[in-house]
Length: 395
Image (cartoon, rainbow, N blue to C red; front, side, top):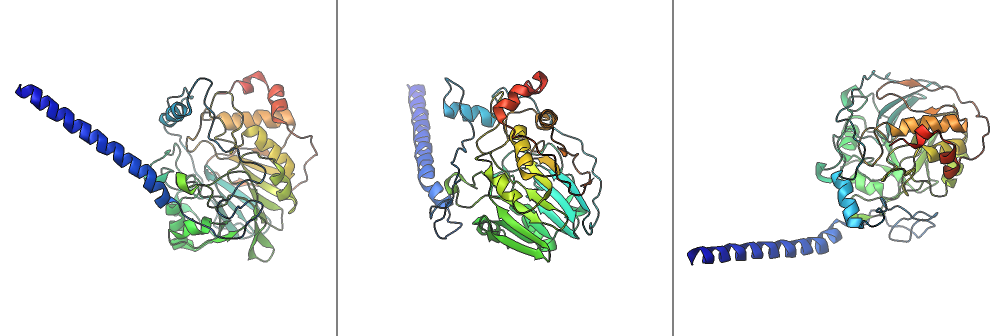
């Protein structure tokens, strides 16, 4: 009798605990998102801002992925988050052999050093320009998220004084507030971003200049940063979706422009044409990874793969390009070295020159601008059919 009574009390206690957990979860779901939501920007309605949230004028298709036939979306997302979706294995650690960059590069000479993911140090005209700087070990809220498989290509204490920082949007793998605070306290660089992101960056006690697409931030005579359109979305938490704008950038330079695509899907691809109108593109930094969320996928709604990246490069009329946004944080399904291998196959098949990848932490001299040979558009489905079987079979 006593055992039965004890069992009932235990069961009752467990039941009460579960009930409170369910109630607490419901309260969290109901209250926390509203608490975490924030108005990062207030301004007039525009072709990409409805007065409350930003949107892509060429249409929004930014779902992470679609589930396989017969699989529910919650099950698909859970398997994706846990890495239990059959994805190819990545290395736990990637060795790098960094070379210290110069303190400055004067005149029209240009040197680029890939630090990892979308972070690149570009040195020219006596300026040190840094794109989407991330030195943190993980990317995600509360230090929870994908972890590095490769250390930064430049140790922070080896980084030369930074003059200009470009921040494309507010996702954690592109806007690292800890790194921005370190840079601000050390160098006080000019930080350029798009509307609303200055509010997020300001939470770290850091000042940024925010512009709408088409806005300009002068750096020095002959050098301006233009905030340009791309195709993406933004959020720090699920509830603040698209409260801040995303962008690419054109840095107008006397020796030929620098283009940084930020993080982007293809959309209508006309944003690359728009960027090209600001003048010859000497160096284009274009994402090539995190494009596959199921076997065989060649692009996601908000991420381009090597095929679309090659078309962006062609539309820009760039003479040199570096593929970034791969091989640092595992964000998607494709194999570790699939992006550079697929890019090499695509550029060879299309006849493109000057667009490839570079080793982490190795300063690369960028050749002077030279107008490329005109080539026909690269259409994704047609390119897939033309690729060698080995390239199509990359995991």
